[in-house]
Length: 71
Image (cartoon, rainbow, N blue to C red; front, side, top):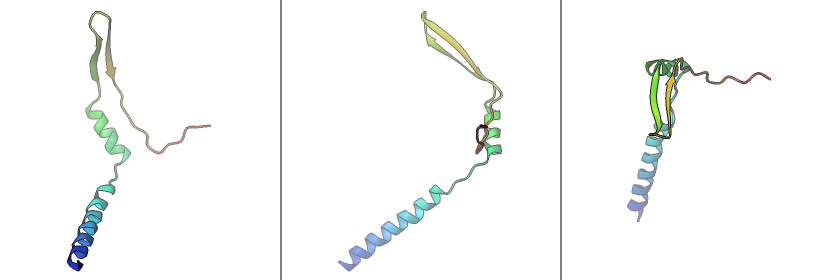
């Protein structure tokens, strides 16, 4: 019984330690903007043939993280 409890405690503690590393991730605004710059001028055609069609182009993609809207 003691070996079972020890093994269970060891497994649970291993899972907690392993998952803790997954929750600690940081990314900067500059890194996001660099990634968005790689996908600048993204275009896609969508719609239903014969009903409605749209050509969408995304340009000047940027992000602004942690800013508040002015009053």
